Structure formats: structure tokens, C-alpha cells
Image (cartoon, rainbow, N blue to C red; front, side):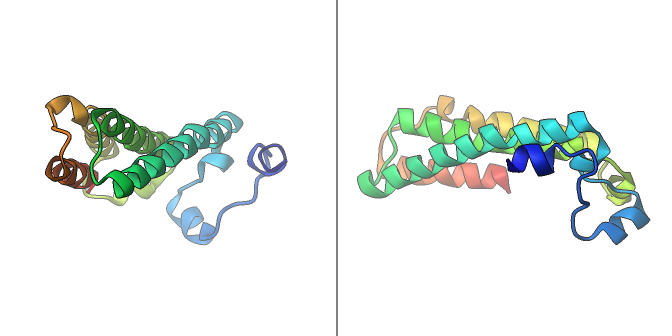
Length: 146
């Protein structure tokens, strides 16, 4: 009901802070066009699924004190998927808000795309199934995210 009534409505209510957005020319993806709003809404599905997988892998780490190679792949792919979904959601927004930043939009998106791919392929770099290796693996993900 929420998706059909609110998110896909072509006259969707503007998000909070709209006076600043109107003044600076920014618009939320739901108010730009129906296709962007639909894509933004549907991008929540893989992001939420990846969040559940990520949480279950971290829960497994708490019980076993290390991540197996399969768990590392699932964790890295889920975090990479979430990063790509947020990147997609950022591309759907429109406005001049991006022009006041120091780094251009294209460079920021390219950098985030590369970081997302690096995170998703992190298990291929050869990690052992030990506690110390798991700690370094999770630290590497955090460093790439920040």
C-alpha cells in the first residue's frame, strides 16, 4: 500500500528541508519523474536484502569468532550491493546542490563505484579462515567504506 499510494504518486509530498532544496535547486528522486521514483523505490529491495545478509554474517561471526570464505563472500557482496544501491539512489536525485561541492559529481560517483567493486571482490584477495584474518577483513571493509 505504501509503495502504491505514496512512493509512486506523481504528486508525492516533498521531503523535509524543501525550502533549502527549492532555493538551491535540488529535487528528491521521487519528485523528479515517475521513472526515477519507481527506480528509487525498487532499489530499496536489493538494499534491504543485502542488509539482512550482512547482519546474518556478522551474527555468525559473533558465534564462531571467524568468518569462513563463504561468509566473507556473502558479507562483501552484501556490503558492495548496499553501496551500489546507495550510489544508484544518489544518481536519481537532480539539482544544482551537487555543483557547490569541491569534487565534481562524475568523479565522486566513479570513486564510489570503484570502492563498491573493491569491497565486493575483497574475498578474492586471499584471506585465511582465522580470527586475525577475519579482523583484518572487516577492517579492510571499513577502510574502503570510509
